[in-house]
Amino acid sequence: MGLGAAASLTGLYSWQIAPYQLEFVKLKMPIQNLPPELIGKTLIQVSDMHVGNRFDWNYLIESLDLAKAYQPDFVVYTGDFTSFENEEQYSQLQNVMKSAVLGKIGSFAVLGNHDYGHGWSNETVASTTCEILENAGISPLRNEIGKSEGINFLGMDDYWGLNFGPEKMMAKQDPNAANIVLCHNPDVCDLPLWNDYQGWILSGHTHGGQVKPPFLPPPILPVKNRAYSAGEIDLKDGRTLYINRALGHMFPIRFNVRPEITVFELTKRELT
Image (cartoon, rainbow, N blue to C red; front, side, top):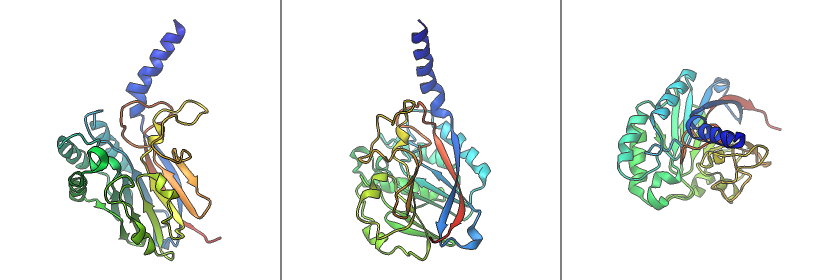
């Protein structure tokens, strides 16, 4: 009887409470070549909102409103804006993005696989999503470099989508500049396209697995490299990967993996 009650309570918690227990994760972000005037500035990362019909997206609006209290200088969104089923998600995303948290200096985004619709293969869904983001004051980067007052944001289109091809962009990355890479899927870190890039890579996609047994890795991760779960990972070659645990959910079930908005304080990384 006791075990049954405990299981029921755990299930109720994982379904009704944990998916909405937002955590603001605060970290330092040392950046090589960071201009002195940007030291101490704030960058917020939002990832994987999954606007749709699988959970109440008013939670997303409330979360974005909370993020505005940080008055960020930069904001980046790392993909999967919707869980696309049909055109209804366009109006839903428009409603959510009326409350988008924006950077005082710059706001950028990359697409995720779900932003390509069914089978990750619909360019109309991707381009319409980009239009909604632009109308909200956010610059989508599709294998492009967005420059913003001393920082270059290198935005890769989604690895599983139709437009992945960041090789030309990475060939043009300036090692003497302050650079941050945005890519939805962290598996991209293992591809031979980095051109000796040194710096941060901000991604999402995994949701941290959403369910993580204590002292064990998440049983379900949508990546080939299962080391890419969540949080900060030193790739041992001058690159630092950060995987956001997602603000939204594919399905509103979470256990031991809280939803996240990441708040970075920019600092200068000294050459070693």
